[in-house]
Length: 149
Figure 1 (cartoon, rainbow, N blue to C red):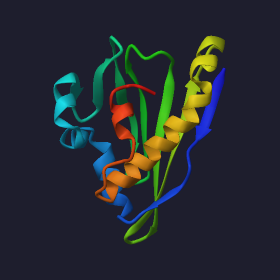
Figure 2 (spheres, rainbow, N blue to C red):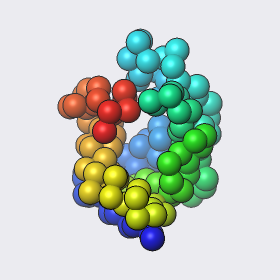
Figure 3 (cartoon, one colour):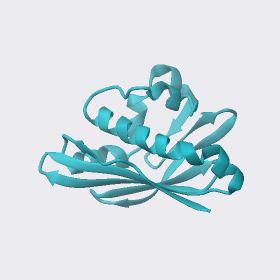
Figure 4 (tube, helix red, strand yellow):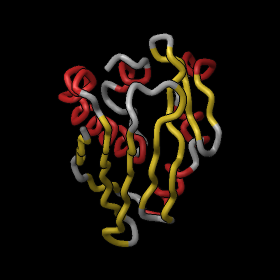
């Protein structure tokens, strides 16, 4: 059963090309990771994977549409197939509209386990990207970095 989740829209006070460029190369995440997690994660331009509760899971870039959209899909032992899309749209030269959409193929068991939490995860991820783009540490980000969602 396909679940489709649309995250909230936020405004980021950075040009859309800057947001897109930062998010399209996953190597940029390495510098933002806390020191204690860096040895548990493998990152290159297209893929980020790490250990979560004994499983090697992550995301890889599926598609890049310059300056407007980046699609990610699961990498490693993900519990269900998904497509996670980041959208950037210029509001003006220095401001960007940003939102995330998630499409996940969930069987009945997965829907019971994860279904209600997916909106929360998408919204927290949106808040995290927005905060990081503004030079802030995303609130409550520690539990997501540890895979405790």
